[in-house]
Image 1: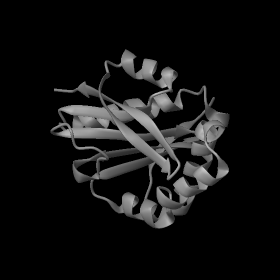
Image 2 (image 1 turned 180 degrees about the vertical axis):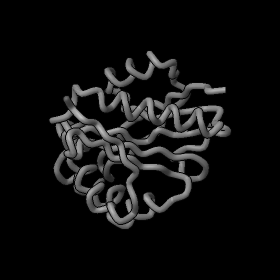
Image 3 (image 1 turned 120 degrees about the horizontal axis):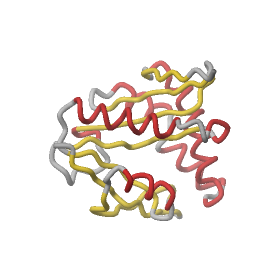
Image 4 (image 1 turned 90 degrees about the horizontal axis):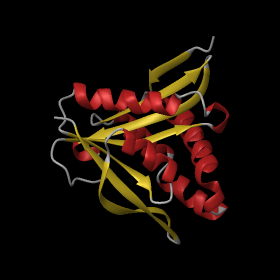
Length: 174
């Protein structure tokens, strides 16, 4: 039987998170991103100092998910000033859910997503929202099944020469 465990990530685990984040991002978007673009993104968004600060924030939460004691993916959520956008009042952002390719198909992404929804509901937020790449139709369909609707778009800067468009999706909780 497969044992799945979800654990909180602390600032002392920033290096481990960085390695996992770089690997999962490359597995997910490497087909559409050059090596230089990936390097630029990792040096900004996944820099060890940036991740340490995020892991220390009182307005963010991070979780690792393990399968049979092997690290398989992670979740990052934000509220208050830690959110990447501030268009909704009393809102909770699901910023990152990434699962290593080797562990896809175990339902881990769904599990982390539902954990994030529970965190938002249990904390009394009115809205939960997220950004999804405009060309990630599979994820868009998944979120639609949970009642998420598009309310805006924003630029997702990968590097100075690569800017993607993310759809912002929201769901009312209360």
